[in-house]
Length: 135
Image 1: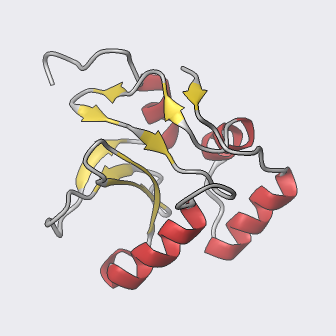
Image 2 (image 1 turned 90 degrees about the horizontal axis):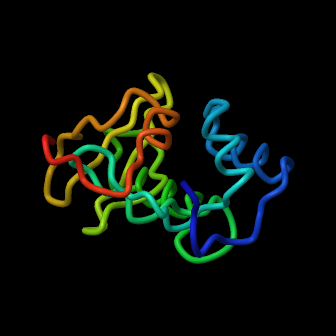
Image 3 (image 1 turned 90 degrees about the vertical axis):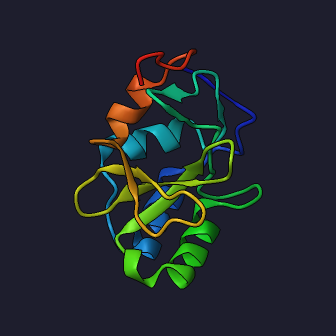
């Protein structure tokens, strides 16, 4: 899977500053992915029944993860252990759980999260060109 329309690459120092800012380490798969691609539009966008339209950049560009994180915490004080890192075609945010490492989506108008994947690595390695017909 490749990403199109990526932002300027971030350095290891910028990534480490980002983890310091949000107050947690996000795991090897997340770090490796973002050091290689600072966000972008995936060529393979389907994960089962879910669609990943964009991975937000950590820095640079519009609506960065840093900005989304600050806004998400402000509007969702009951979900402080989650980091928004992308969204689907409807603008619904994909969230990484800091504690468990699991991936969820929060549909607009819902308060409950929908489980997506056991890990960020499972999500990115499971993206396909076509939607799973059995999902």
